[in-house]
Image 1 (cartoon, rainbow, N blue to C red):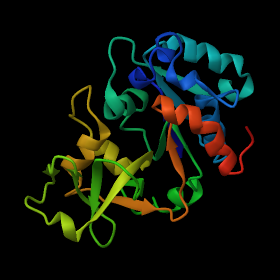
Image 2 (cartoon, rainbow, N blue to C red):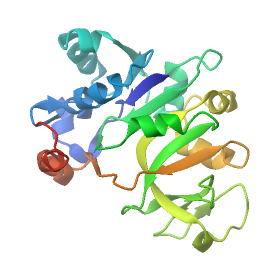
Image 3 (cartoon, helix red, strand yellow):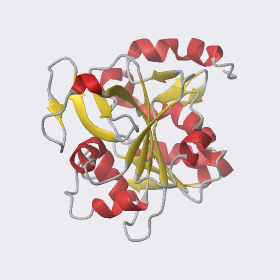
Length: 245
């Protein structure tokens, strides 16, 4: 399995901090977010790790070099001209014809996710998404077998699904965690998509024919460090997980 860390975004909600420092290099307990995620992924011994960069991307590349052996094991995928979003970023980073499995992780997610369990669920799927019942307006919809069948915005009532009119109340409505595994079948289905697209738009469009499974980890604790208030509480969050800070 390969691994990818999405680190190309502007981190707009964290301005003015991210005007001069990419979100990936903001520190929690003296350790950059990117380094924390990278350490978690390297425990799985992926055959390759890729970090995509755009905003202040050279700063991220330089930081990886400064981290010595742990940073030297990472390949940087540049999106210099424009952000390609998550789906386009994947296709820029990996060759569709050569790609096998990729464990993708948002750089701003801190959690106690059991990545081994996630990997173990991937063998007979096209994609596996770590999901949970947490506060979020945008939620994915799954049937009784936890196969994805659509998406909804609970605030506006919008529903998107290849199955037409679906009964949202009869489905599992869960929030995406920012951690996922993309398999060869999903990569092949991305051929012909535009250079820039979001991976969730792809899943919504393709969930009628691809096997996209949701995994719920009962004891999951997760913090999205994309907002100032969550960045300020991140040290206490990690201490609550029993992690060194």
